Amino acid sequence: MTTAVLGGGLSGLTLARLLHERGDAVIVLEAEPEYGGLCRSRTENGFTFDTGGSHIIFSRDREVLSFMRQMIGSNEQQNDRNTKIFYKGGFVKYPFENGLSDLPHEDRFFCISEFVKTLIALEKGELKDPENFRDWIYYTFGKGIAECYMVPYNEKIWKYPAEKMSLHWVDGRIPRPPVDDVIRSAVGIPTEGYTHQSVFSYPLDGGIEALVKAIAKPVEPFIRTGFRITSVRKDGGRWQISNGTDTVEADRIVSTIPVQHLLAALEDVPPEITSACNALVYNSLVCVNIGITGSVPDYSWLYIPDPALGKTNRVSFPSQYSRHVAPDGHAAILAEITHQPGDAVATMSDADLVREVTETLAAMGLVTPEKIVYPSVVRQPVAYVVYDIRYQENIAKVTEYCRSLGIPLVGRFSQFEYLNMDGCIRSVLDFVRQYPA
Ligand SMILES: Cc1cc2nc3c(=O)[nH]c(=O)nc-3n(C[C@H](O)[C@H](O)[C@H](O)COP(=O)(O)OP(=O)(O)OC[C@H]3O[C@@H](n4cnc5c(N)ncnc54)[C@H](O)[C@@H]3O)c2cc1C
Image (cartoon, rainbow, N blue to C red; front, side, top):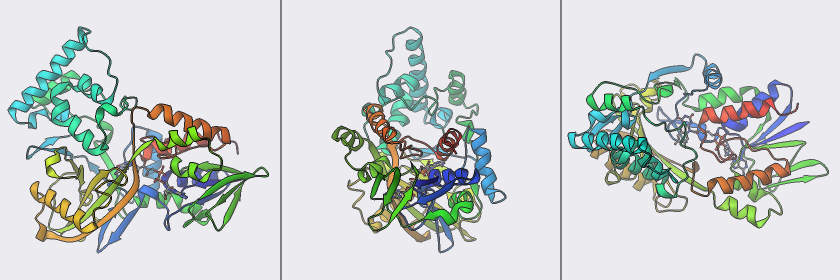
């Protein structure tokens, strides 16, 4: 029994490894010349950058975290998170609700008084249940935190109106801050939020790709790169997977490629399934990598909610994660710009994108252009799942259809869920446990 794993990103590779370890025959089919998907890294001129945006290793899931850390072994640097939000020219501790004492007085008052008023209204039963992501932000944080940070930042990263986004995904991912913590943070007593991420790991050498390389090692002979799947069909009880010139046969398949790509490769998909799939929303990503002489501030990464500061939504400092990713006397900055497929950012030239980011970094006082010794641009067409208001209805139709064909879906864009690396590995572990040998 051979299982063909469609897609050679973190999910596909972890799946192939676990199946191989228990004795199953596997083949991984990956479109790109290199495997790794969003978890790839590139080293040029002595700088190593993650090509799918800046990645760190963290998780609440102990089994998964220990798997990831075991994979990178001694190639690990552990770091304390020191993340800020760039707000009105200053640096506010992240998460925002734990950094209220860093705000200008008026904004601090606005945030705390609206938070308290919202809690009182909630206690009195005066608040109606939120129906969309925007309502949920106001309901959870109050008008102050909503308008100073949560709404502008979320609209900047999702490129989607918050009132048209679903709220089913926020539970657990964005917790309601304990009232004591919010008041403590407003009066300047240090508090921590998102504590499962306050210490994180990163590979010393090789960027985040070192993680997928370690996972893939035992199955490397079974990975076929440069194989862009264009057709998937069943013939005589066996699956035929083709890239247009070659066909690979398998007894079973598991898909980790985006559902949009899978459906495009299937025959006779009913029109209502195709339209549900086409209605799923996702964002693309541009990464602008900047190598500089000298140093960067002692931050892990910065969120930039202010639209006036340009298109960049987040800036990371990979040379703070690992001392090996920039040459001596140099530092690395990775700017991320999310965008909708085919929009104005998609058609900007690399030179214009570098200029855009350089201006933002200069306006933030982070770096002056003459210090830049290395710029590069990487584009990821499929980067973020966007949970629009009709998401649950659409994804249910698509998933059910694939299930009816006997094609399990595992991974971020296959399940079409906002899964981080730990969520992908969790999905794989759970899948393998119930997958007959
Ligand atoms: C900006 C950004 C930052 C992130 N930061 C973190 C972080 O700090 N920590 C964390 O845990 N997670 C992070 N993530 C999430 C993490 O990148 C994903 O969870 C993970 O990489 C998803 O792996 P995957 O294998 O499911 O999908 P992918 O990596 O997308 O892999 C899918 C693979 O399928 C291949 N493929 C597609 N179509 C075809 C086809 N037709 N034929 C063959 N192959 C095909 C693709 O080339 C790709 O290799 C981040 C994501 C982004 C966008």
